[in-house]
Amino acid sequence: MAILLIRHGETPGNRDRIIQFPDTPLSDRGLAQAERLGRRLASERIAEIWVSDHARAHMTAEAVGRTTGAPLRVDAELAERNLGALRGRRYADLDFDPFAPDYAPPEGESWSTFHARVDRVWERIERHWLERFAAVGDERHLAVVTHGLVLRSLFERVLLSPTDLGRIANADGQVAIANTALSILEPRPLEGDRLAHRIALLACIEHLDDETAPRVNPNVGM
Image (cartoon, rainbow, N blue to C red; front, side, top):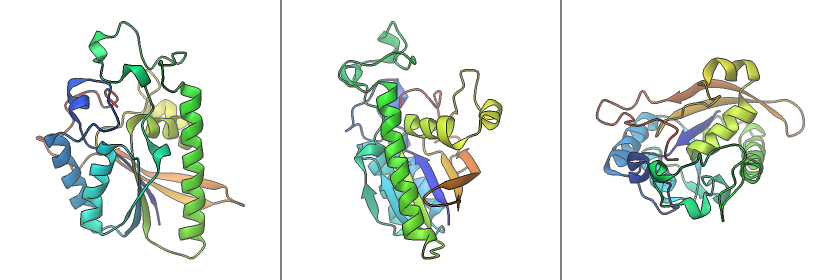
């Protein structure tokens, strides 16, 4: 009875380092990654899959749904951070860091707005897990297919202790999450609607081979 957190497969935007639109699909490599992820999870008892409304996440979730038979539930608040007017631009063409802590993209989300959205959807996921799985003793799993910045927001702010984050993160304090990386949380009810989470697996890509392994920095081109 776990929560599986999954990043979508590679897209042309990831490959070419372009800030993406919501309708950006998976690349051929991303489709192969998603198929390998689906095969890895085929024997897991996944009851349902929550997924972002972005095409790249939905295509990844469909690959998992095909092998597990689990239905998809779309939640728009699992979407990647909205970088607004920067969408479609190459990272190399920018003379500033679009992920700087104090930068808010035109027509997009500030970090505070984005983190608040992530907190809202995570609260819904935890509440759903308590009511749908824990309360009735359902031993199956809940899968969540989303995006790199969403997962980093959760791990870096919510799920990892400062000590663990310091041990796992890179020099910039970031947790690297590659395309189709799989993380497994083992929730434990505390009191009321509060949960503790044991991270049984973090950002694992052992289902990928040399042909499908990430080709770029895992945290570039979300």
